[in-house]
Amino acid sequence: MRRPIVAGNWKMHGSRGENARLIEEIAGGYPADSGADCIVCPPFVYLQEVGRMLRDTPIALGAQDTCAEAHGAFTGEVSAGMLKDVGCKYVLVGHSERRLIYRESDQLVARKFAAAHAKALIPVLCVGEQLSDREASRTEEVIARQLDVVLELCGPEVLGQGVVAYEPVWAIGTGRNATPQQAQEVHAFIRARIAARDARIAADTRILYGGSVKAGNAAELFGMPDVDGGLIGGASLKADEFLAILAAAG
Image (tube, rainbow, N blue to C red; front, side):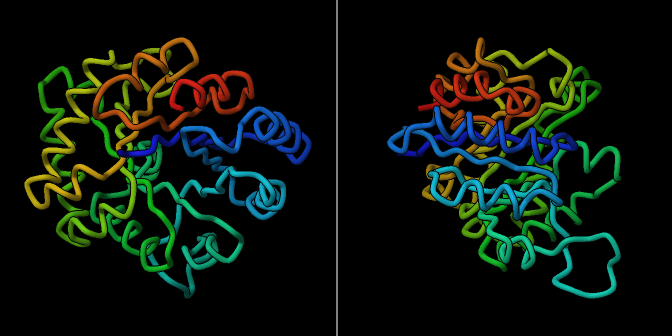
């Protein structure tokens, strides 16, 4: 049985004081025997400090991005090896904001996935369509393209050692979210796409939903058979909301 994951993506939010309060509240309300794994992904500059706060908790540390290169003259970049060195277990790759704002290609995202895996991090591959894609009935075409590049570069076995997160771009930070049925349809498509390469790996791969998940809709979303938890944005900055989402997943 696939164990659910709830991952909090803090994006470019936080301060040392705010982070300490948030971690204290989440750790205090998250039981060690919870039925769901919990990850928090702070900005790069806070990773080591937040990692220390998490040391005696069951909460895992994740990063929001990584460089596709292992080392070298890449000013401003942070490698997967560095993330591993400061205690990260997970790393997001291909978040829609990286794809759209920073023009990251499917090929670059696939290389980042491979770089993370090579350093024993668990990459969380983010895929998702824009509103124009959904309105033009291109959702599956977009998801297939984003997924297939990783499958071609890494193979299904490596993909299966990571996590996939479906995040419809039109539902991120907009207050709109896919209905549970819409989320299930895309998650089932993702699983079937992987199953075409390896059915066993597809059955075991955890697929998260991200896009305006909150306490009020989490249980219904997570009740779908192919939704294995959530990638949470704004609600992960509010301890009570995040804990309620964790409870819904567990």
